[in-house]
Image (cartoon, rainbow, N blue to C red):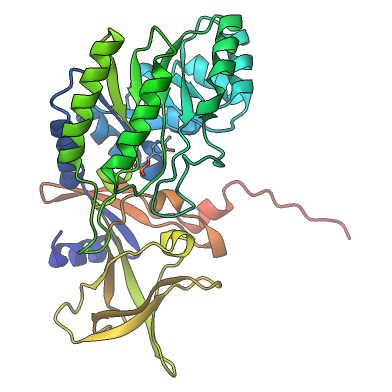
Length: 403
Ligand SMILES: *Cc1c(COP(=O)(O)O)cnc(C)c1O
């Protein structure tokens, strides 16, 4: 998105601000769809947790996507956005039976991720088919916090536990309608996906009446200019062939499902923040912005890189800045990063601010969360108001202790 336009949005809506380019989401969605034009039944279940604004969910709906939901509230958001229950895949980890009951009552499709829950759920709802999340024992992902398919990960039913699964479903009469995996985020290597897929194919042969196989999300997108990203087209070709071959062998045309979060929404987002203070210390020039880890946690939580442009002074001489937040913690966005000269009042634009940015924002330090704007065909739509002080007070109950 061009810098002048971003500046005009900052002027119109204030700072800090999240801006999402709807056209980028659409083109990423179509890219994945085209890459799998060789299969008969592709389902794209957008990972809601990446960016859960209801207008974004509605956009996914217009593209004929489904949702992957990891909490009952995400299922409810999906219904609110107009999805039908069968378009909502509930793939939680470690939730209570009460939450599963709720998902059943709303009609969402359910994926279970432990043996004990499979047993309890199956005894209670023998007529509701479920899918199972498998831990394929594969180490993948860009960071140990986001690798979730390895042998000691909390997610999924170990691939070694298939005899137990079969025993349980024999007792309960549950039909397994799908097998599922999600091995982590930021996976670059197509081979890793394919290795995981082979594990799932093996597992799938245990069940004779599947409807789908879900390979999860985790496609890598570029955060730096020179970063490699998953070659979706190549991946689509290899996986489609392998999947079609499997279906032939299995004797049924299954649906192939994916749950992309980052791939669809990472690059659509820009986070705009204003520079409050420029502070040269002995060996570092700090640029302090009107935001912090409360609005954009990824750099601190994952050591994630977000490219930063000074859109107020794009032609300024580059200097090395350490960009920090205003939270009373160390909240460093970038260390000694070359950026066009920064002056007080300049607006900085952070790239890749679509996925896991607003959705991880908090009220820490009693700060309000930013507004969100969606842009489509050069028109901007406010899709979330900036929070106000009243929002901070909203659920608090004032008690005066009589001391
Ligand atoms: C988070 C998540 C995803 C999406 O991961 P991305 O890296 O954003 O593609 C998909 N499936 C499940 C079950 C998840 O928890």
